Length: 89
Image (tube, rainbow, N blue to C red; front, top):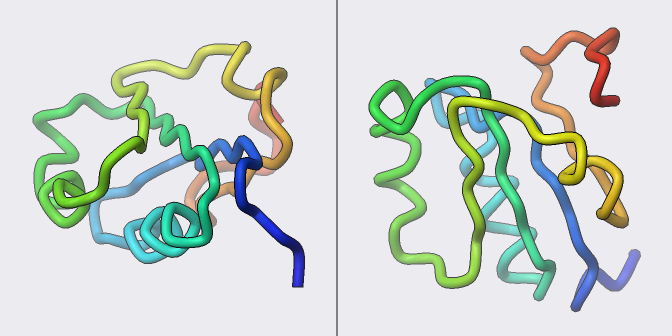
């Protein structure tokens, strides 16, 4: 298994139904430096965000995607709902 402690991981697509919630939690528990990015707003993602409110150190970029979150990272985890043809991947 890969040691994720201190690795920068971008999770693309938090999702509305909690699909990435477990992934974000697991990555954070492994010691990864997690950035979650989603084109949906904080209000739209309120239910998913509520499930992660106890985590410290997870960075959220909501309502947009920023290229630097995909360039300045060690790994990108794509939510299955995100098209593989996304210009950020």
